[in-house]
Length: 103
Image 1: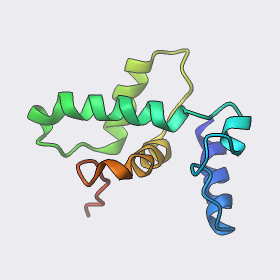
Image 2: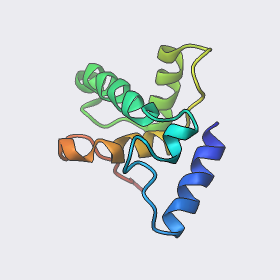
Image 3: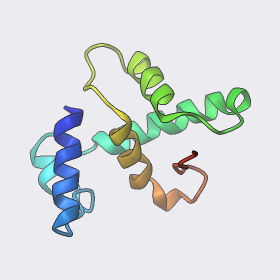
Image 4: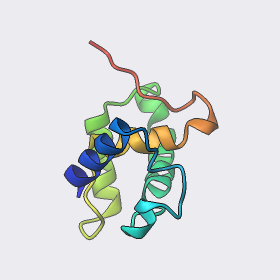
């Protein structure tokens, strides 16, 4: 549930806990152990496929819509907060994948 994940991440952030720091932490106990890693891999694949078309700049809401189609109707629902968490989770790969806020 995207809303639950968002509220949970906000709560953890407010008390200084990184819920992604350990695979054996609370996310694992909730059945979310590899969720963001898997979503991150799917996101990277999608961005690489779209790079020539989009120039490497994609709207988060468009990526969510495309990932929902790719993942199928039985997959866990995702939203833009999940995309942001997946990108943060892959930060060790460098700045090739990051979220920019354009106004």
